Length: 181
Image 1 (cartoon, rainbow, N blue to C red):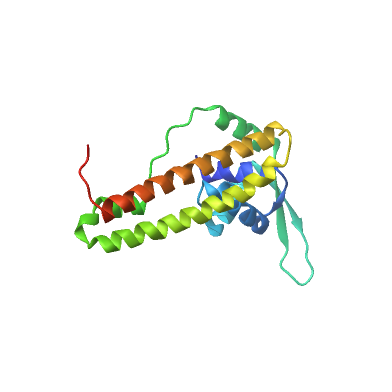
Image 2 (cartoon, one colour):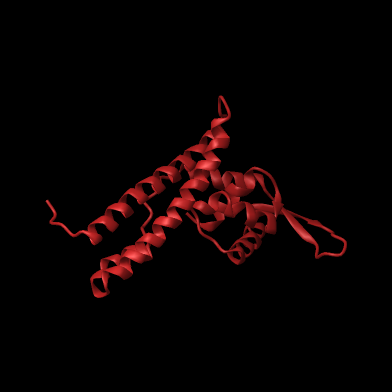
């Protein structure tokens, strides 16, 4: 997947400025696709130049003018074609796993501290996902768009739960080494 796809999907709900998109991105697609605000702004310009987005210039008094971006029919078609293509499994890039793989080079307290830090971060992310989940559970039936959003959230919940279970096992095994059966 390219950042372009993530931006287009984020703009499907409603047109918005680059600034608002970057904030919304952080609270939605940004959970599973990482991009800096600078990357988002650069990609918006490319998507507009390629005809996937159209921007309306809004004059603002006392502040710089802004552009409000909207997905064009051509952009929707581009997304539909991309969604219809099979997706490969994404490669894992995780600093913690690389550190753990070479963890025998440092005192185990260093690795344990790193694992505990990640455990806390994943607990916080799980709590964030659970708060979002509560808003979905208030609805008796979800339209397809909301169901698709909920399914990505459900993946995030299960990922965090699985990660926490692994992390707790890793901490226990480093703290109290035992033989593998």
